[in-house]
Image 1 (cartoon, rainbow, N blue to C red):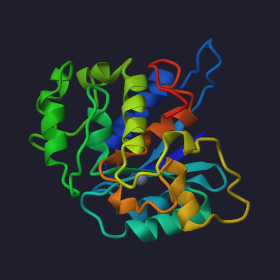
Image 2 (cartoon, rainbow, N blue to C red):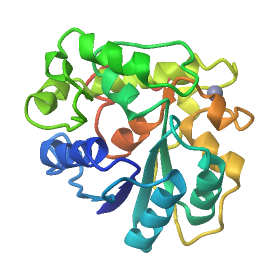
Image 3 (cartoon, rainbow, N blue to C red):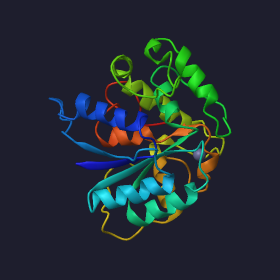
Image 4 (cartoon, helix red, strand yellow):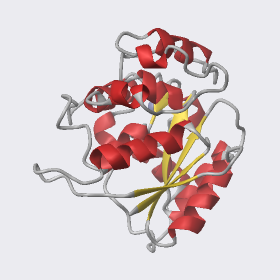
Length: 236
Ligand SMILES: [Zn+2]
């Protein structure tokens, strides 16, 4: 059981339920069963709110907080609180929508916190017809045909997300440096830099300048999803 608190109230909780249903039973190749408990609030959470909610819900269990760059200015505070409490961060810059897009195509180029281009690309991506009306009339759900469109592409998404770490403008960031194994949350607290470096970005790479990037791939790899299936490589 792991607890994943989400900034969003629709897209991310839907996606986590999809992970439960698609992968939660484990498989014959040795992937362990898991159960994600999504933690979210109507009208959403701030990044700091997501970290606090994860902490409250998880007690000593594995906990993650998912949040985006696009709207918030309390991200450094959120990361600090996460580091102090051993809560894993899955930060997406500009937004979780980038993680969805990476299932269908690679992406690059700084977005300055705006999700506009990412969403446009997602609506138009090949094999992503189910996302044609994504975020129109407020519909950012991940159900039915949208789930089906994502299925089987998780390895590709992980590989694309890892390549964004390698392509980071900072220059010293390596996906092979990312950490995905569970931590002992009862141990000593981590420093802000060490915690933020679990994404594979260098300790000296400022989080808000990881543009574009998404750490959601680490959650999948931590669950045993994606690395074997789609050709993601352990080296950079
Ligand atoms: Zn970086």
